[in-house]
Image (cartoon, rainbow, N blue to C red):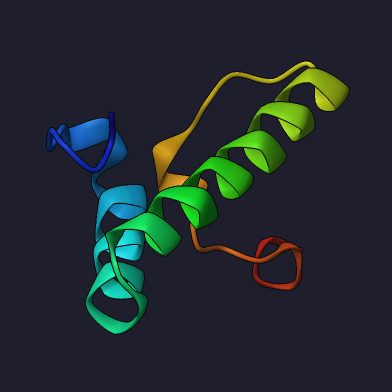
Length: 64
């Protein structure tokens, strides 16, 4: 869904997926995006936090 519609909250993920799609194709980008979303959802579940689109692309080293 993120590849189809732009939304302000999902803009960083959409841009990331579009960069992959331009290099590798839309199918590979869709799988990469699904894997990344699974990782985000797992981290949210593990930590008990809400989604924050501003944190996309920020590594733990940059936060600490």
